[in-house]
Image (tube, rainbow, N blue to C red):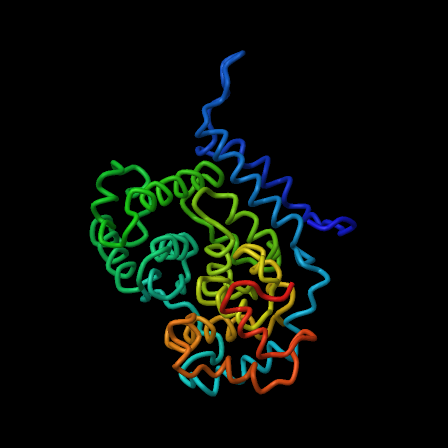
Length: 327
């Protein structure tokens, strides 16, 4: 973090950090003189790091001097992609209780179901994650979180095996459920839907305080389940943000999300996220050097502009391809 940048800490961060001490994910107090296990220390470090990132960049970007995207640039890309993908990017859709949360970015009313579906969708195809969620519901019953939390780990692994990374995801789901119950006395996070009592920042902080829930997963739950304005950055949004030079070339995915959540206007976050994901999935012309023969509306958009960020747009396109980028 550059010197001189003021850090903004949300008041709820300390509360969440204290709550984690009593979580079932936290190890029992060590005996006098005993060193904590590497696993426990690693988990504690990961949670602390996630909370620190949010505390530092809730109100400001990790790149406060990087002025892109402007509101106009975000609106231009939204309009361009909406014309190119007319079936996407419309008004925000209310979450449906009949939806499979693993195939709708977590767009269901139940917050825990949304989290589970989004966890299952990590690092796999929509078809695989959808099948895994259906199998999990068939094995335990939908929303039967108590049964999932208490089940032998192997039975969960078997249920979600065809979704990929079953061992890791089964552990994340069980630990999430156990931690929620330890913290709230029930398998529910519906209090996060109360916008009058729980701010967007506090909802995000509680979600990422649970093991297995990173900023992208939490942002999807905020955006699609809770109807809050958040800008989730998946692999497609990340790649296109680099192509558009909306973040410095050395930005990682978490930094990109923190930056764009500040820079993208609230009213565009839902539609722009949906459109960028759709374009990233469908367009062959923006997927690296091997697809340069295919056209891409975003590449054309960049080339048609005289300058972007003070540099010729054509050079920015080449830099984005090579990974060097303008900083």
